[in-house]
Image (cartoon, rainbow, N blue to C red; front, top):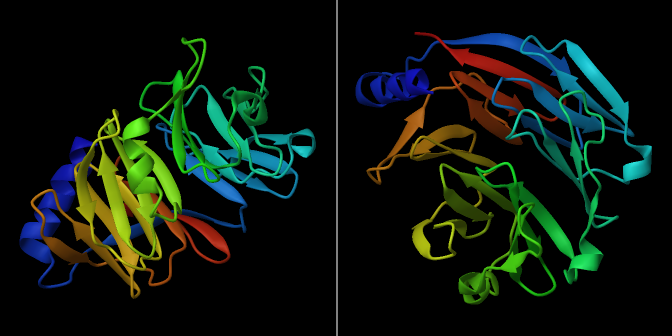
Length: 264
C-alpha cells in the first residue's frame, strides 16, 4: 500500500499537469456481476446468476459455489480474506463464506434482529464487526460477533434522515456514507461526523490512503487529504464501480471487470 501511495503522490506532484500516466492492463474478464469485491490478497469475489466465483490475481477461477439457497446476492464484501460476507436484500440475511466460498457460519437473519429493512452492509476493519443500514428507520447498526446483541449508532440518526444511502463502507477506521446526489459523509467509528465531501453525481467512488478517488464526467479524480482535487489520467472513461488494492486498480464497466496496474 505504501508503494501506491508513493506513486499517487508523485503523480499528483509531477505528472498531472502533463496528463502522462502509464497503466498496464493486467487482467480482464467478460462479466456482468450482480456484486463483487476484492480481498486484501488481490483475489476477486463476484456473483453472477446463482453462482459465486473467486478469481486469483490473474483472473483464473479458483473456486465457485452455487448460491441458490441464499437468494439474490446484492452485496459482497471480501475485505477480510478468510471470511467473505455476502448480503441478500430480498432474504434480509447475511452469510459468511470461507476462503473456498463454502458457508462458514450460521446466517444472520436481520428480521430477527429488530431491523425493519436493511439495504446495505459493510465489514468493519475488525473481522468480527460489520455495519448494517436500516432504510425504514434511518438507523445504522453495528454487529459484533463477540457481543450478544448489535448496537445502534444513535449519533447518526439526524444525518441519515436526510440522506439517500447509495453505499456504505469502512476504511482505515473511518466510516463513509455515500449519497450520490449530495456527496460523501465521513464519520468516526462512534458516529460523529468528521468531514463532508461535496462530490455530486459521481459514477463510482472509493477511499484509499487518506484520499477519495472518484469517476465523474468520464474523468478519474482524487480529493486529497489536503482538500485539493486533481485529475488523474486513466485508460477508461466509463466506470460503474472500482476499488484500489495495493498498486492495482480494479474497475467494472458495463461488460467487464478489469485490473490495471500503475507503472512505476
